[in-house]
Length: 247
Ligand SMILES: C[S@@+](CC[C@H](N)C(=O)[O-])C[C@H]1O[C@@H](n2cnc3c(N)ncnc32)[C@H](O)[C@@H]1O
Image (tube, rainbow, N blue to C red; front, side, top):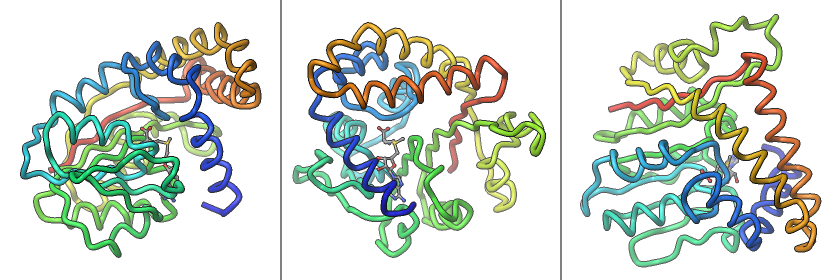
């Protein structure tokens, strides 16, 4: 990702993690009072918190961890060791206790960190890789690494690719896994994401003034534009969401 986009992400997340209105919005939309920047609804978050078997012996890597909310919750609940990688400045991230570590860097440099996670989580971050195939190869190459990859496939130009890419076994991620001959399981969360966009728009619209009063009108406008676009992609049959489970 180029430096300007990096900076933009950084500033946006930094400001949103200081916004009470955004936290209220998150609680309503995601069902958890934590700062999140993804398309996880409560059911998907519950899957992460309750269905991924973790013990104190596990090391969980959260690739593109954002503010660190999901990783922190897992570390707290399971007493595993947590490692978050993101390009965000460390003051936008709240990963700091003796059981976790934040590494500021590029997800594509995963291999250079020489980590040995036993569980890797990627929540809406694989889109930002310059080389998703190389990244997946490295992740799958780590012995005993269970990988959970939440990925939405959006189709912006249906003439070029055809709708087949929206099917779970034909998304860009599925294609890479097949090419690497890596077996996977899959859960379809498309219905969840469609509803999440609707819920998100409602939760945002009723907080327009609250965002404005915090001096965050621009963040409100950006967010509503992004969510309308997502809803429109679902309304026109151009989006899908899946969790890929490897290992
Ligand atoms: C859609 S957000 C998801 C954040 C987090 N996983 C969550 O669920 O709230 C994508 C995250 O990827 C990070 N990111 C984007 N490009 C990156 C890169 N090249 N290397 C590391 N992190 C990156 C962004 O800073 C952002 O925190």
